[in-house]
Length: 372
Image (cartoon, rainbow, N blue to C red):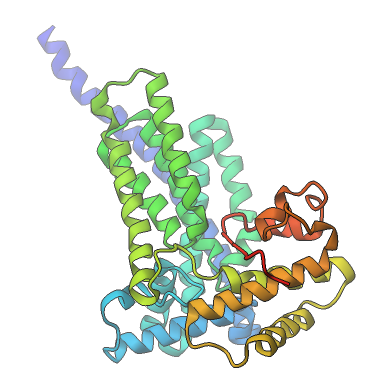
């Protein structure tokens, strides 16, 4: 028996190493194939159109903010809470840093540098898709990976300066970490889950309500399986990291604008995106026509733009809610107390505005009853 044990342990180790290598090899091939395709697309667009080929509507703002932040870092002008980015920017801290690093490293070629880095992240997402699918059924791994590699949406968005690619990367990583944690609930897997969820939060804070739902679901699963208390350490670590990420955003916003709100863009987003979108859906008015009209309406009602960002946001919100009531008069009454009301009102639940609002359910809005 002792002799058998001597040979069993090395044999088990060899089997374990062989299994790990068998998993690593296809993952590496998936990563390289996805990266080659994404870089080829990005470089082709850059060669044909320059920076314009890498930028959509919001991309111009993201790139400008990144350039400004990079210049401020070079000039030694960043202090205190501003290391977490500017709260008035539409970008969250991690994404602002991600884009700024591209301009720090590549200078005037920051746009293509950022897109190439996004290609690396999106290739990682393809690997995560492979691992998630394989955890469900080994036969699903490769087809799922091929679908991710060839997914036109992923390819195109990875070639644009948007938050989608980096956000999806962290969400996919979170799913992988959740699978690992459910199988082996140790604190390191919990830390990986917390890192992934925290990263997603620091790119798009609208995911915040779902973070605790995800952790709660894993907790309920652990309780259902009657796991010992010591195995809850992973979830505790994940929760701590998530809370730290949310606290960083709230503290930054309070330091710069005196509010612990997680998002400061509500009024502008409603006035300059949702209202033009609803108007275009309703009567085909071009998006930018309504956009310019909303800017003019705010200026006519309140005068020159306010230097106080929160005040400017409140002004935009007031005008936007008034415009929404004009677009959908049937939505007047107690049920309509602002954008949330249009989702609750039976008369308005199927309007284009309601459908548009559901697409940004993570944002929060409020309105006063004395609005016109």
